[in-house]
Image (cartoon, rainbow, N blue to C red; front, side, top):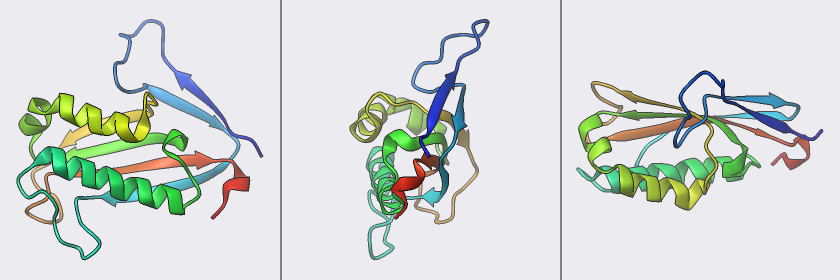
Length: 140
């Protein structure tokens, strides 16, 4: 079954930059990706105190999960980003954007950024979770 993804951009709303308002998906298999943080393979925090390094590691972990799940970054239809330091996130937006585009290119799923009081581990500054929809022939 082939997947069709339709980007939803209401004409009476401001043009989104770096995200989509909505993505309608027809067909396919759904992969839910749990929150990924800046842990290395041994479960140690990478980039303590550095939100850009942590974002890069969380994205690498996210990408690994979707690849093993039979998906690609372009199959992601929803991305939720949680940070415990919105000011640091905003101050490093250009570097974070470069890291994002290194994985996703100019593919922008529906996205949400939320500042939270804290994340699972006190040293974690960012967590990324999402949903991907793949062609059913791409099963792992």
